[in-house]
Amino acid sequence: MSQSACSVFDWSKVLISEDLSFNDALKVLSAGGYQIALVQKANGRVAGIVTDSDVRKALLRGVRLDDTVSLVMNTDPKVILSRSIPHDINGLMKNQNVFHLPIVDDQNRFEGLYIAPQLNPKKYNPETIVIMAGGKGKRLMPLTANTPKPMLPVHGKPMLEHILDRLREDGFKNVIISVNYLSERITSYFQDGSKFDMNISYLYEDKPLGTAGALSGLDSKTRENPVIVTNADILSGISYSDLLIYFRRNTSNGLMAVRTQEWQNPFGVVQSNGSHITNIIEKPTHYYQVNAGLYVLDNKLLDLLTPNSYCDMPDLFRMGLEINLNLQVYPLHEQWLDIGRPKDYDIANKES
Image (cartoon, rainbow, N blue to C red):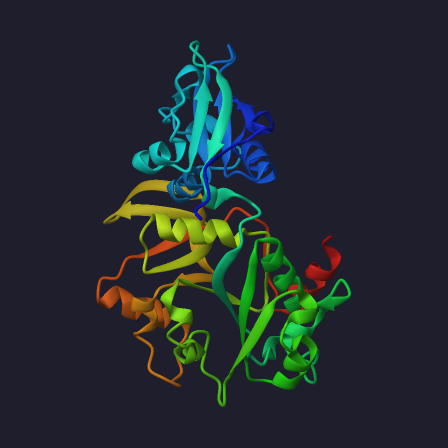
């Protein structure tokens, strides 16, 4: 039986003013759990909405966190009058291709909110998560001399267990862990996953296969649905459900989560035309999108892998580009930490 769109009883908790900062709006959107903030004018009327998709697009456009939310919001959202709500709200939302449908009164003031069943936080997600845990963690030696990096403790339990906790909270139970280096330390601890209320199986790498190569060992049943892949040394506040929704909504073949990193040139940059100075920019800051180690892949992309052969994820995406697959980025604003160096490991154990 299919799920129905539902009316959100606590919709007012995602109501914000249009002069709020982007950063503060993000906090409301994240805390609300519905992937939306309802933006109102000073007179109480609709100014717009901010959805998770609007946030990702704004980050790609270079909107700063201290900018106002008015630069991010959709000022012409689809809404429905409270006096004319149809019986088939599900069909209406499907026809309009929306996950959110705000309810307004005759004065264009928010009165409620419908959300699509995909956004139900209690929804079970049958898709498989693959955790790449086969690396040697050379940069963390000597900590990893006798312990695989995913088993290093963070606040008293292995970092890999933190990832599993986050997945379980997000409705995922089917996990495949790719292992190689000191694999028995991982398999003996997590076993079949039953003590963690999860279903865990393993991909065994006889040799190092890179950050993507082991995925060639996934069976056809697993590959019927999109596969979410995460590195085992990434601790993040991301919603894996949201990642999957974004992937499907954009009909992607491959989705790569990215983080915006900034770098400030320590020198004044001189621009010239021939021998003539045209501009001087003092210590300019440059922004880059960097790979965050989280992905969603469909079968068309996975089919490009050669069985049991070494392949890193950037190379797999390059192969996809060569045959014009639809590959997209998913800009992160959530907490994220790549535990690749000793100082990162120290940070992980200091953060709450």
